[in-house]
Amino acid sequence: MSKFSEIINQDKPVLIDFYAEWCGPCKMMSPILKEVKDSLGEAVSILKIDVDKNQALAAKYQVKGVPTLLLFKQGKQLWRQSGVVQKEDLIKIIKSNN
Image (tube, rainbow, N blue to C red; front, side, top):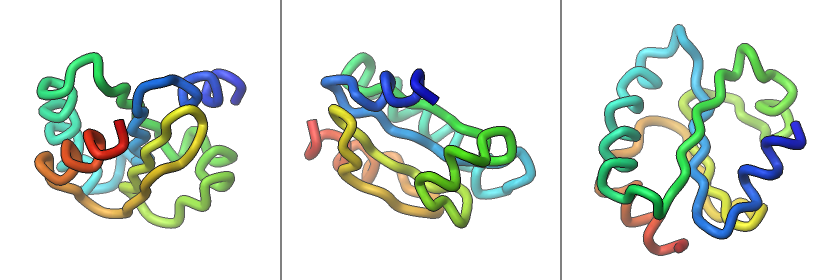
């Protein structure tokens, strides 16, 4: 858990993708997240968290549905949304919080 708080306390935006292996929409997010990372490079960290393997963390952030995306910077949650988010929208959100 402390590793997670280290990750979200970075000076750059950190996008967390709470997902599940059995979730269809979650599978749609993977290539989108890859494109976002390819576009923004080192300007963002992206971390995928399996809710079935990390139930305590999912509960802490009240993740009820997957995929749920959260954006952190310096430990503060800046944005959150459940469901599939398109690449352009994600890039806009990350850039506006950088």
